[in-house]
Length: 307
Image (cartoon, rainbow, N blue to C red):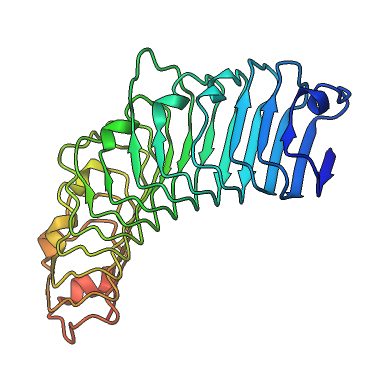
């Protein structure tokens, strides 16, 4: 690794980056407030470029087959450059703590080796897809937590067919409406938002989803069509606005074990023997407004209920 700290140049380009020996595989630019522009040449042979705590406002890339990891943090970068397409071996990109506001995910569509996009802690308020023609992406993780998103149309993720993780937590989501088509999803994180409802009925079947975390939203009802997640064993609906819950909403979840309903203003909880998921072990309803449940002895032998 070669570290450049407190550089007193405004532009880093081929004069520096092309002169590095091939034994240098990682380049770190750190604590360099003079740096405002970076140009990565085709001849750059290093694999990883990390830029931290600079005044970087622009970065561009010539066609390069070596650079596979890019990290930019704490910089006044307003846009993700379209020349990112020229990094033909890109596998990991992380851009955090910048004023980036808009993301066109089609920019990442034809990176055949890209697995992780980490765009947490920015100011992103819109995610769009301008075009998806012959998308060949191998993307596995898309991390958009701690931004300013208010609305997401799930179809923007559809061309990324191998996606396993989407993190939308800690945003300001008020709407998440449309058909979700990513069948490989195992983690969909949408906690700490402002969602008043979420309807899963248009979604495709997601057999890899084993846990669903939607705590700390504004939900007034249990999401419809939870059976789109047939292998769900844990649901967290804590800290919402649920006032009435029926266990029948979860009856089709044959492997559900844990149901988290704490910190909801629940006054009505309907629990009948014929609607109990067969594997259910625990219901957490602490800090709700339910003080008493009329529950059969048979149910109590199967389920721990915390009030």
